[in-house]
Image (cartoon, rainbow, N blue to C red):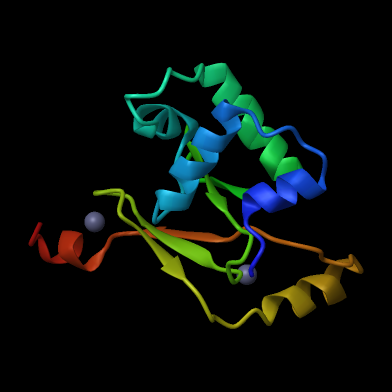
Length: 141
Ligand SMILES: [Zn+2]
Ligand SMILES: [Zn+2]
């Protein structure tokens, strides 16, 4: 069976608290990256509320462990998504309606170019595309 994020946390000897379990469950249900404030809002209302600071700290820890990735959409907002068991991808983001779509299987040839130019060994990258979606362009929302 494919290892989930909870198994990977166990492997890394991270204690799985109820709060962490709830945060992961929100991320697992999400189709697109979620901001810490949205994780907070989406936690099941039947469960005791998790403090927003705990959400920030847990997400940062998951990121250090390489389990989630942080995406910066503008100067004030950033969101997280689970990367475990998912192919590498980018996003297209509509600046008007804030729609986000995944973008997979695009040419990654630029990595080679960056490597050549800088003599760096590139280990990862973040690349997001901003613009206007088709509905916003046509005004058909
Ligand atoms: Zn749009
Ligand atoms: Zn890429």
